[in-house]
Image 1 (cartoon, rainbow, N blue to C red):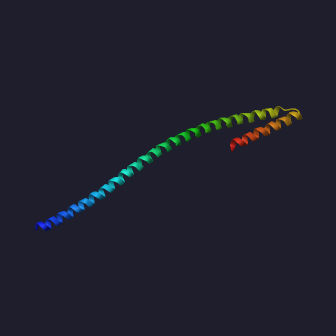
Image 2: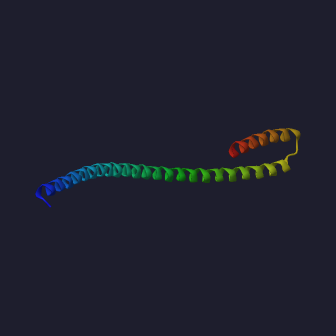
Image 3: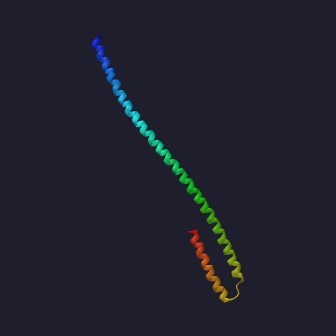
Length: 112
């Protein structure tokens, strides 16, 4: 192989390495950007996880409070039954029926 042919081949190899290096630089830049995006997504996921835990805690609290209110309503309804059985006069019955309607409305609002 002559020196001139060798130099042409060497120049071609250098040109290919230069192109490869430029392409590698672009890939490296893209990878840095991708790593930044992944870090951002991880941060957002952590925030969402904390928010979900907060919602679950609030839901649990509401569930317990609702259960307590339901228990109280059941107790009131049982007391109303006892009072109904003890009512003697018409005035007491009318007063009791009005009270019973109010308790029923409260019960309906709690189930919504």
